[in-house]
Length: 353
Image (cartoon, rainbow, N blue to C red; front, top):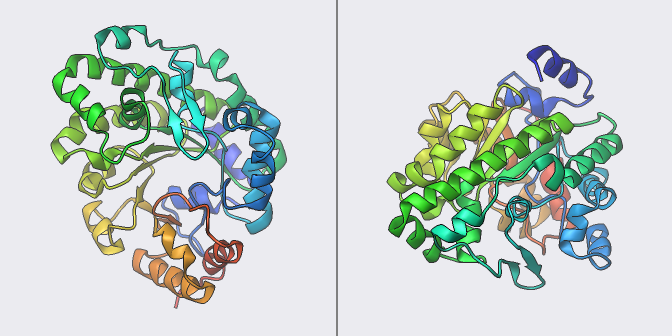
């Protein structure tokens, strides 16, 4: 998509606050959305969840699009994020992924050696992940150009963590062992994931998403030196390939140490988790890039009046410009509906003192 076309796309969106904040423009208030906003804290989501298993929801465009717009109908965020999962990428790459209730992702045949890496394919995303593109088109119709739509992918390192470990983990020790004992195979796997992810995100932009976010959920598991080798160089490839087609947001949980490099990467915005203060995030990132975050998701369990006060304080600390209000990680399933509303409303009601 050329720059002129992109401009026309933005012009046609009624509420483009989010896209303007990503460009660093002066705004009347910062935009707001929540990671995992389309999901498990909403009763209307639970009603669909009770009827259909997880990957059926991901693979059925009518269900994915409905789930995507549910929180928008209820709360009126400034951006929607497509309901999907980062693990659709390994599924497309010939790696079996199951989602087990009360357990999470389970990969029965983890990749643990060179032979396993050789069997991993770089798929034709237009075939294997066409259901995601159809979900984007269905969602764009439901959104009716009211707000932008975000597409996302996991970082190659975060995907490798699941592919090698076989499930979630507090340490991802097996994934790290694989990288440190067989770096040649590890880098081949990371490159295959990167190539697939670039093709996937480009297809998403072509299908209609207005911005993309890369989730490096497990980046903070690595030391700063290992982060450069096994994570960030691959994220950089993704940014380089996408940045002229759509704004790219990079969110690395626990990756405060990489904010300086991330700020020079060509990303439009950087996500920050709740362990890094606004002041430190601005300082570490050089002060010129849009930041996104960083309310502790568990703080949404505080009373609504406390939430509103804390959100206002958070905006004052980050500043209203070059800032997207969000959580520091995904919303928790046990957050009361009124508390989620208080978070969104506090941003909409924000006025600079």
